[in-house]
Length: 512
Image (cartoon, rainbow, N blue to C red; front, top):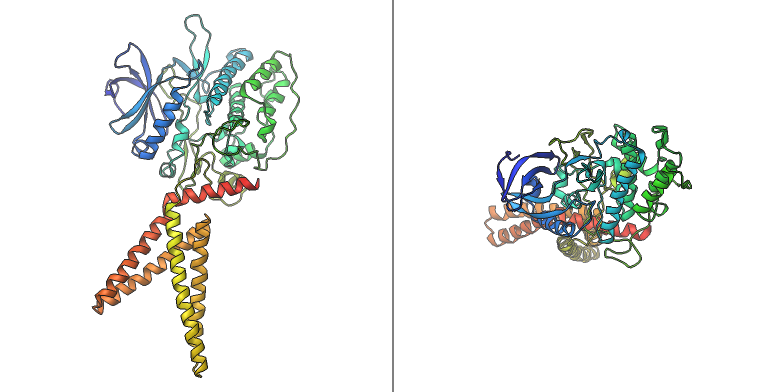
């Protein structure tokens, strides 16, 4: 953490506003203009990744084009002293996680959530999804210049950038909030604006009730709540609210997204009508969640479908993911209370969560978005297939020799054993190559096993030929050993895993 009063990228750091799993937010003095900004510095492990840096810059450029009174403005971004940084509008106030809704009329909370809904719909119209709507990302600005308190939405895009990096996910630095994630996020579906609406409804519930709709010490139970449990009735906690509010929240939190409101603004408009007794929302009939929500065709901007951001890519990992305190910049200069630290094991959006909630085994996580590179996988599959064909040639030669031995009356039992072994090897290596070229995880594993076996045989060949001083054979077997080692590296590389998960997700979406 940098010291207060230090200079950074031309800014003078005044004090820490908040700190979380991704980085630190400082109140900083602008180098040229007489104003303060919220300067967010991402941790060095994020900043050191070149692909993440390019993605961060692209996301920041997109968010900087959003011009809405309820969206925190982005002024500048860059990289300095090993840190990625972004300069944002400084909002004096607190966040919705620590704001006391019981001290205000219910309509005030509804108005603030409505302002957030307007920001989400505006962003969606410009091709941007938030994907991390939660109380900590809704800032409540202090009243000033005759204006009432207002809501301002922050942290567009940055959390989504972090999920695009497998290594960072594996180290457990991604901030994930299960309490507000939609069923389609938890099931690894491609998300649209209705996912943000679901999260906004969870946020509304939490602001009114003081806790999220699904609470448990076990994260699997929280996931199960989002996927299959009925929406709790807010009025059991807040009996001062009209019963119609329950129906409005239930519709916005419908398990099937096509049963939700058409937009976040429609949701909050109906909510205000329910609070004022002008409208009784019809209850939504919800079926148990099956994980087969409607898919957005393609990854561009089709004319009749909501935009789906291609930047979201979920990568399975064996690391732990930590839910950390939000990067809120309130008036107190400290991280706001009310947040729980918990290691959840996988990021929000990883489809292994569905199996986790049901008590089943974890699965490989698919990747949505632009197709990753398949070069490494194709190289391994092609070379493994050539190995298989080479073994098949030996098999054919062995069969002909065995038939010749039978004709000459010799005992072919030893040859039968060799033929059986070669047949198994041909079947195993050939199947692994074909499965890998078809983007199957089994093919990846089988190809790695094949390469390891070939490498071991080559290593024995190197040792034997070197001891026999047959240097030509030593060089040839050494080359085979190096090739086998390269195959293991390419097959086990993250790019191969990303491509396999992507193709798995595409196949799954075609069956839904």
